[in-house]
Image (cartoon, rainbow over all chains, first blue to last red; front, side):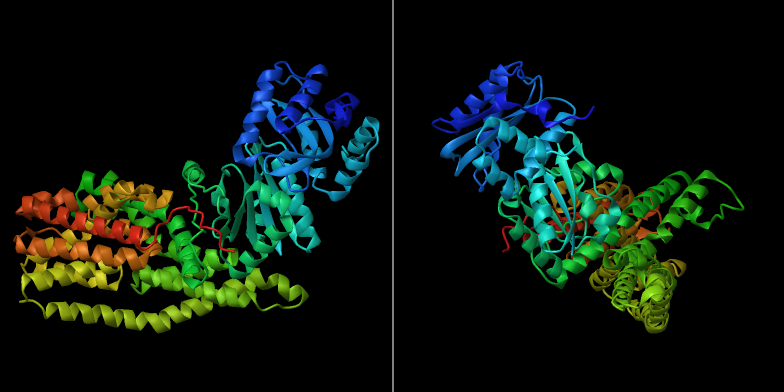
Length: 152
Length: 485
């Protein structure tokens, strides 16, 4: 059984038109989505781990307007990624980001889910992928875009 | 060009993968080949050694310490933070191109300095050869080559030295050197035989792997053969260094000749070793062989003419000679002088010469103990073995340090040895045995002052070598230089 995009995300985990004040609020909002989707056993522990990762090494935002807050935590029961898009770029560390991917990975051995997450992360490096994410009209389109990018 | 990229992130999920992707894309756009290694929390899949050897430069994009950095010894390394690789991969590739062309490494300000990794991985017998030696140019390049040779030589020194010391302890220094273990088996004789066989490989291995650093695998044969001949002509480790560099130059030059098709394939197997060995061997024998012999005899004669000289002058001369080339012609001449003295009933020079010969290894043992991080992990281990070797009058223990950094180490050792020898003569110490170090202390006349002389020489040399390494930037540590670009 190979892992597909549907194992790590779904339309439930996509929030277009995210309205938040700052990066921390964005992380919170997306963590809630992961929680509601049943992927977190301890939402607060996970969130703490994400904040910690943000604060070290200058945060997770990149020049190209994306941010990838992430953490490996015992508070994660199932690996997944939540995607949030804001209408105007958010202050994120010393960058601005309008595409935010919150990644959750369980502690312990590197597993197939994490591999898929890595693949997704790699695709983000490409301009074309980012542009199509910005132009996507519905959560279904977003998930479809991600599915296209992850070839097993 | 060919690059190897290493990305490392503490969590190992996103950034390292993204940096990998960015570097791959940028490299391919510029027509380069790149092999990527992604380090994550659960370890990493390393690229194979052949890929590393063929790489023109290594790119390390890391926010975390990178395991097994010693695999990249001798290669130009560009170090950046992960963010740089993700945001500006084209620039990073550009810097790698430049580093490869200039043959030196550079790091961004703030890139993670690697100290722990190098020491932690010392267990597999390899060590990190510092590549961030601050600056372009021949000096740093040659230092790197010497360090590579030394790092392969050190296990021979350590094993051989300890075995010989054990043989001395168990069987008596003079006795074991005279027994032929194949006719007259005793354990000490066997230990001595094994140890001195290992020692016989010091110079060939040093030479061979200096050449390896310069010219890769095809260089090993010419280098080793050059080193063996250096032994034959009595040129010592300095001769070995010369042989290694010479062989390296020859093979590097040969590699530039591109022959078509089938010829091109036989070059490494047939031409490089054949021409390499021939040229190096011939030069060593013809050009160096006779002069070395002449120098040795000349030195011996000159020393003999100093018979009646003042103790201080004689001590300074003998001491410095003992420490100059440890096993080479100058050292041998001083030792021969002392042995001749023994035969003629003069016991003072022998004591002085042995004191001078014990001092360098003891001094280096002390130096690595008081300032560990001026020395590479392999040197530190060799330093520990040097206590035993120094005590046993096995001067060769100092060779790795001298070969790696001759300009700083050799003069420092010469001063301490000169002092030890002079003090020994001034204190009126005498010795009736040709070898043995601490094991023949009972045969030393005025042994308390003798030990004092050695101790003083040891401390002086140790302080000098540490001082010179510390203050003239010769430190063999892994340090990221500040942004060169």
